[in-house]
Image 1 (cartoon, one colour):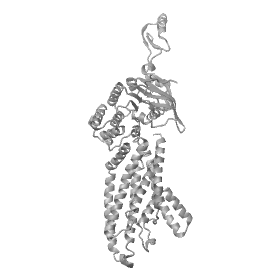
Image 2 (tube, each protein chain N blue to C red; image 1 turned 120 degrees about the vertical axis):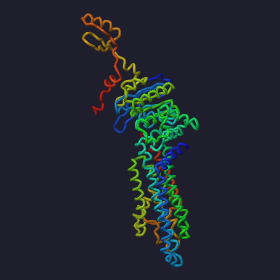
Image 3 (cartoon, rainbow over the protein chains, first blue to last red; image 1 turned 30 degrees about the vertical axis):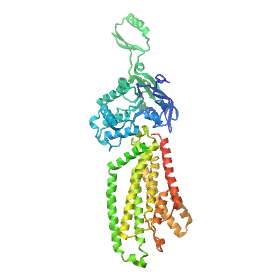
Image 4 (spheres, rainbow over the protein chains, first blue to last red; image 1 turned 90 degrees about the vertical axis):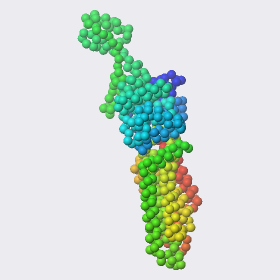
Length: 293
Length: 281
């Protein structure tokens, strides 16, 4: 089974052999995962793969049946672990009658992040970071879904937690909003925050994530850096007869391959390493699960 | 403890912003005015009757009015408690309101306690205000009160606290609508059981009486309500003929009832915390 590991002594989020069953549905079947400080790890997988369950186990909303999980050195879900966790749920809602400022103030009190002038400054900074500086006094019930998602991200970042668990944080955002979130997460990464990002947006992952964990049917089916996972194992050779992919060709075999083609009378114009995309990887390993259900 | 107050404050803020308290205040004033009008009209209408038998009938009128007021107050306080608490757990989880709160280092027990505190402050406060007003108006209009008029108040507040915690417990298991329906049906069942108990006692039907007593233990708000009525019951030769509430009579519970009610309330909260603590969100 593929696993993703950061150096053992540095992992801030660690899951080992996690299992979870909802009645008859096995949501997690022994998931291993590690996220180091300053690392953005993307969780990919089809709907129902177990991504949200894994995120919820890590933040204490769901109890695992087996395995272990820890956040910032404490058992996942415990008070000390949650004190270091910022979480944005896939389906969440803030009370509609609160303003953006009041939502953050409530969570600041619960997180004991800051008080007095420091709390005001933190709220203003967070709202500015997510692009809601002008909406500080706007009630949640009058906000668009995208604005609420931005507010949710600001809420998750209260107290600058060591770990951010984000379940589809850009699902309601327009391209500009997604760009803002990428910038926010890049800054969080620069501060040393460990980010676990659950998303379906592969382009976003390629732009942002340091590593990817692909989950299917509760199992990790691939894990590694984006570069490693999309690295080709062959070459694409452009000849007078068109482009041909030669898979599973080692680098040392390329000169002999080209020589053979030339000997066969082909004109070789270019030789490029074969590089797949995350989408190729996803479709190869997971396919279209929803249409198979 | 501060987490409990943050959650309670949030729930109270909602009651204010959603105009729950404003609506309650307006309707309270309206019902208070109607109660005053009713008391004054009744006094004028039966003025001569009050002096029959050398005044032996006189204490029955304010006691009966306070009994009816107690029934109405407890009913409305319970409705308030149910509406404020029915969606506290499962309903708010389904709406996604709870998850962001409990991931913060807020214990789920603290969340529940905060919600219970807010509902008890609102519905218990409502019962206190209405009962005090009704008692004061009755005293002013009729110039006398049953001897235990003021001491009935803790019974009514205790009863509404029981309804609140019972609703909170049910909200850990059921959706908002199902919780509201089940608690209000249990409330009605409690009152009807009390009435059946009176019928059973009148006719010596021990099985019916036993069923009524059992229901009183299962739903002790009913027993507390009857205890309140017993405190309002007038002394004197006609007292035994008077049924204060619209659904049956008074029955003193004593200290044992209070011990049981407090234990019941704590048990409801503990079971709710246990259920909420082990549920997946």
